[in-house]
Amino acid sequence: RIVYLNGRYLEEHRAQVSVFDRGFLFADAVYEVTAVLNSKLIDFAGHFARLQRSCTELGLTLPVSEQQLRDIHQELLIRNQLHEGGIYLQLTRGSAGDRDFCAPADLSPTLLLFTQARPLKDAPQASAGIHVVSLPDIRWHRRDIKTVQLLAPCLAKELAHARGADDAWLVEDGFVTEGSSSNAYIVTADGTVVTRPLSNDILHGITRQALMQLAADGGIKVEERAFTIAEALAAKEAFISSATTVVWPVVSIDGQTIGDGKPGPVSLRLRQRYLQLAE
Ligand code: PDD
Image 1 (cartoon, helix red, strand yellow):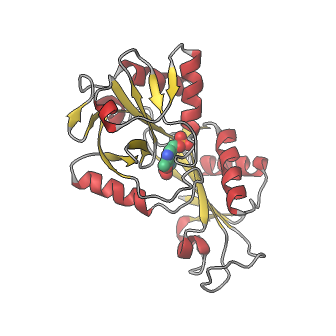
Image 2: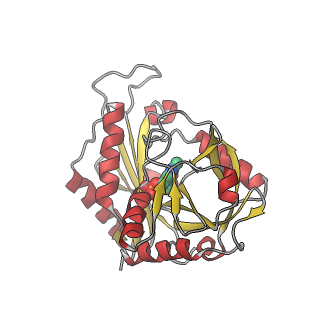
């Protein structure tokens, strides 16, 4: 695989980052994952806007312009002949050549991008649905910033797998915040899609943003409000969204079946419409 690191395209084994890089020592870094479908970047502008927002919130400076970054994505996609999957981007504050909590102001940031081939259209989880368990949300309180501080979601996924499930839905103060690496939704008896409103409690999903628009265009009612696991268990459908899944139906929560235990029509319709955007 060819990766991009600080202005160069390199074989992955040649790409090296300092052991003092603040991304490595302090998770002082932000990231993005942009989906690739039919060899095309999906919603690059949305991902760029969120990246810029993450950078602003943390006082990080992007070393490249939007057009340069788009070109880097395109170049990587071509060099790796990526047809379907995603491009991962990470920007760290850089290395000061030692470990010090306070970063000097003049650091050069580290910019890394690599491709990941993964099935998006024909993912088995999309047709079978996934099983989730609810777990306490132990993350920090700025989940709107896409940092690489991902220990809590890693542990949540591991715990979910240990319990025989595919993923976790995180719960805070009795309400679902989001999935461990996705936004969470339910569909009520009258076909309304319910998902938590944007705030610092959740990541502002780029896929979520597109799905909200598709729902509005398709006459599907959406309510942006927090919901409980009890409400989700009584819902007709449940699903998650992200750049790595698009939409995956959730067919059980904590071992209890949602609806008839099969991917629901609203989830599948939204998934289909989203995939059509890339045609
Ligand atoms: N995760 N919420 C969380 C906590 C996430 O980590 C993600 C994405 C989302 C969905 O955002 P988007 O639709 O922009 O992908 C919501 C990425 C895919 C990841 O960590 O791999």
